[in-house]
Image (cartoon, rainbow, N blue to C red; front, side, top):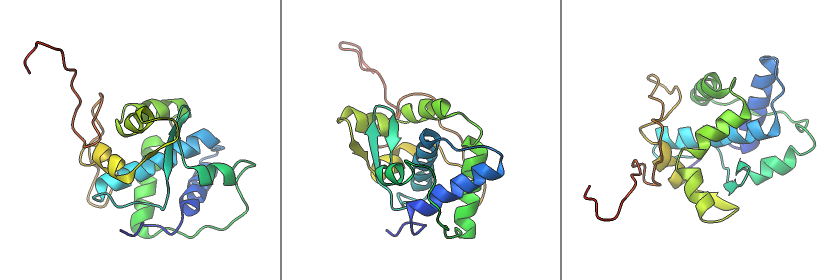
Length: 175
């Protein structure tokens, strides 16, 4: 499947511009977490389609898109980004409305409970959080505003990679 935007850089620069217009400076960790949430919610709402051609790695500090991390290490590069399509811009505005005012640590708490990130991190440091994992973790139960309305927020708890609620198994106890 073809991603909705041509470059992860376009989404990162759009988020930086949106943050600037809100009078904030977007910190690197918050940028990384917003990119992850954008990819996750988009994949969940669009049957596993990527918003952007990004690869997220599970690190101890949270999900990391290494290309953006290294490109933004010295601050935002002086580049012009392509305007997103109206549908993608509506999606990104919904994402910003939902998460833009939240601190980076709060975003990490949300991400840590999504099941996808936790599953990848359990596989080892720098394991990839695949778009399939994101789609399963966010599909049908957590999405930001998309064309046609707003889907519900995720219920708290732990989720499996296939999008089911995880339950604690106790030996000798029937389900």
